Structure formats: structure tokens, C-alpha cells
Length: 233
Image (cartoon, rainbow, N blue to C red):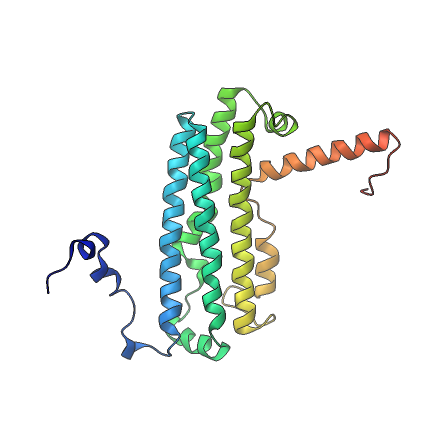
């Protein structure tokens, strides 16, 4: 039977041939494991694509469109987080069986994941800095006077969303590791607990977190100077 136009456009024949055949599976759950990770790579490819478009829009001073792209990125990130629920249905024993086929492979080697870690600092933030330079405005001014810089504030907060959602995804992924192999079992790249502590220290747009530190520090100092104890010291 000839391929339909839909099959040709989506390339379903090639796409559905990327998984192991049923007789090749080491265990029933391996099909799910492979598909979840393959789909994740596609979603991460879309995030990369949309962030690069965001940079183009920022350089064209089209902030509303850039913010729209970032909203889309956030929705993709939420899908990435949600689909990990599927892997919770896999037993530790089945995961260990799948490991025999995965060999020394690790999710830390994912090209999509590496891109999500790299693109904020290397591609997106330089475009933000160029924009702020053209507008002659600082992050401090944006966050102190949000009503005067609504478009820039929205942009910055969508970038914080990206940062927060990526951290949420990393945390959720490591909880999945705990569920599969325990909290103290060494993984291929070190103990999961150590990975969790190390990963959660990373900030992908550090300046957007530092400006919060600055504002809060100055607020507490001002309150103390006025004889008001904020409870923070």
C-alpha cells in the first residue's frame, strides 16, 4: 500500500523504525524507555530551535514576539517534566535489565540536554545584554521599576521560567534515578545525591538571580535602618 501524504510528511516509516523490534527487547518496558528518551530528544531539539528564534527576535527589538517564543519553550519544558511520569511505572528490576543493552550510556550524554545547558549562556544571554545596551537600561532598573519596563520585565521573567523549569526537570530526573537504583547507589557519573547537589547549584541566567539578591539585601538594610526587624539577618 502506498504511503499517505501524512506518512510522507511526518516520515512515520523512518520514525517508527527507530525503536527496537519487539523480539529484540531485553524486557517489555524497554520499548517505553526508548520512546520516552527519543521523544525527549525531539522536544529538546524544539527548545533549541525556539530559543534561537528568540535571539533573532531580540536582535530585531521584537520583544512581544520573543516573549511568545519563550512561553512556548516553557510549555515544551513542562511536557519534558510530565513525560518522566511514564518511567515511574518501570520496576527497578526492569531498569537493571535495560541497562544491559544501554551499556555505559548515560542521560548526562544526551546531546539535547547538553544543548539546553549550553545555549542560555552562549547564545541567549548575549542577545539580552545587547538589547539592554540598546535600551540603556540595567537589570536593577527593570526590577526596581517594573511598571516602567513592563516588556523587559516580562522577558526577564520568562527567562527565569526557563531556568526554573530546567532545574525542575533535572531534579525530577534525579528522583527517577533514586526510584530506579536507590538514593545511595553510585551511578555511572557519580552518586545521584552528589549530582543533585551539584546540578541544583547551577544557574543558567545568573544575573537574573543576582539582581534579586541585590534588591533583597538593600531592602533588609533599609528596614533595619528604620528600626524594623525583617527576621532576616
